[in-house]
Length: 214
Image (cartoon, rainbow, N blue to C red):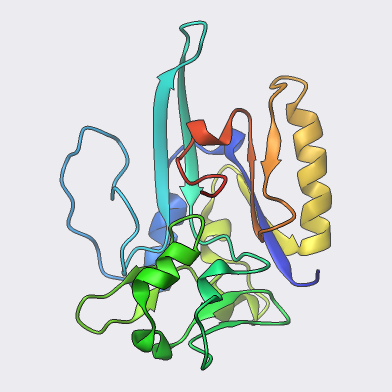
């Protein structure tokens, strides 16, 4: 399928949150008031004005060794978006050229609970006052003007790579093969179903509950 994709190599993520901040800056989104919940993850989840969250996960392996995993979470821009299941009048569209899944001002007329339930990654969020629904746009305004997404551009470690889908899929394969030499359980998550493809070194569920979908 044509269009674009992003590869997220979680083995290179240092949880600097540069992508999270770049997303806020480019989309001119206000800050979110938060409080300490006993984790480095901040804010704790998506909201109408937060399209991207860097998630922190920690625990113990069966051998007792600790793990601490990071991932930058966002809309996956699914090839067959579940959030569009209840759409009737173009409230949500999928751009044919780029593959980006875009929410329009008409989303205020949708059943938000149905839209959110349709997303296997629990991404969409609604503004209580306007009833509009929002999420990552794949930086549609940037990629249609020959620029890469703000989050990708901001990443200091190269954990995120953007490009034509076929090229990204090829890169994903090479990246997984390379990581398997050190991390036998390395894999790509849902590569045939989404445009934002995560490469992980361990069980996706250890990174985040919704990493691989419900």
